[in-house]
Length: 368
Ligand code: NAD
Image (cartoon, rainbow, N blue to C red; front, side, top):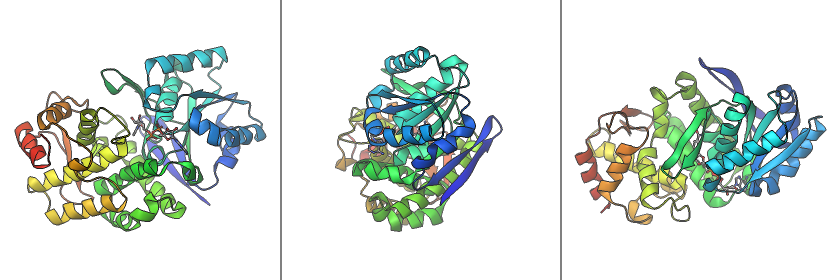
């Protein structure tokens, strides 16, 4: 049994996100309608070792000619150097515009392979096969692709929508526990933005879902993809509503930067969790929502083993954090933009945040 969810919007060819168990075995049949030539699977070394053979077998048994191209695991692969190496390999394979790329991996592989697909021969088709929870609920849907530069994360990229997304819940069984919990932060974020009933279910299912229960994970992925695809369908280029998906991210990015992007200290998902807690506490400090609401948020995050307090992860500077938040690429014309909330499921975009008030709030949070 699987669920097929449509993604459509004014500016792109509609596509489907299929969510279910045991989908990799049938990947070849799913990809075949889109593959008019050869298939190159781009993956990282870890994921390729775990799931590459099943993927290649499935593609070959559907009569597709496939090969695998790997990059080192980790954020450092989202670089100009790795992008150049990948594109050089595709040229060496003499791939043409009838051929197709499959991104098999987490958000790093999806972002890098997606950007390579956007650029190669001015754009070729690609399919997302996300293998982390974060990638299944977030990065594989919506068409954002990017690499990092020494000046910041995701600064060079393109919008390039996949032709198909295949999210197999079973591949999450090999994911390290901390990665699973980090992805759960993005799931909770979707409930916090616009679906209080989903959030309540997640808060109660937090321990089992973030602990790897497949049924809870499947339900969480399906609803998250519904929420994300509805938002992306309305606003592909982030002119308005898509910014809501940044709930917890502006605080989170500033924290990640303060802590030197050291994943051993703070993963991206943990930063988002802490960022969501801070966004709600700041909303409460401004009188926008109640402290009872912030307690429900903290309880839901904590139930999944996610951090909710700054002191749990390290020291950060209030003023430098605010400077980073204002310099975040989502800041418009120097104005500081944050996603705040009037309640659970009631997030909104606040485009005129007062930096002095925010600095003061961060000090109450334990920042220096
Ligand atoms: P990741 O891709 O680095 O994967 C995390 C780790 O898990 C890696 O070491 C990987 O090898 C390993 N792994 C992946 N799948 C596995 C599996 N099934 N079993 C065992 N190990 C597995 O990290 P991520 O958290 O998936 O993605 C983070 C990236 O996503 C960041 O670069 C971020 O900028 C990007 N992102 C993009 C978007 C977007 O809209 N494009 C949205 C959110 C995040």
